[in-house]
Image (cartoon, rainbow, N blue to C red; front, side):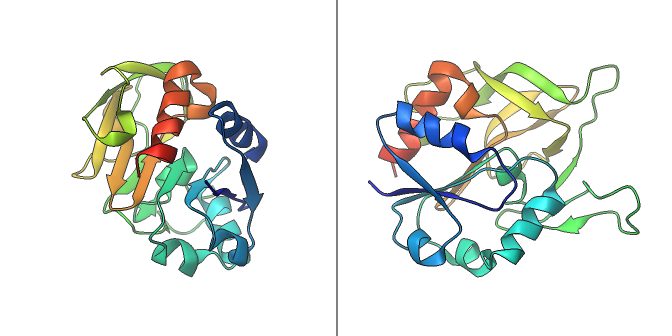
Length: 202
């Protein structure tokens, strides 16, 4: 199994690589299109801001590859958020209300409406999920580890949702594209099982 972690320059990729290793596999970290084209599974992590991840995708000429791949791809945290059409996570000095993201699923990423709650949403929270193969063997409302201040609207693509001031998409699927708002690499046995499912079930 050839697993590649897409390097956009905007993530702690080693933690994801180590999580894959705990599942019994190895993963390469690369932005090399020739290497990525030979992958069986693709993982797209992201930390920082939506703009920084998109900038990394553009600067490494990854846009067309990601949009057109037919390989199973799992977005993690910001890597999931940029699968949406747009994000309101823009720099303070920006003169625009949102930035365009990949548009693989319809919907916009917005600032969490978490009045009275601490932001970022950091720590363990439950995921209410469907019976999608990504969650095979994981009980409904299992706990996963989150760290974010922006969230994706609920939509037909949602296969998992979480409550933190509002209900938001915490897992999605559209064709060969999947994504999770939480960090499976930090989510103990449930996270390890989800990564194993992604590797084995698609």
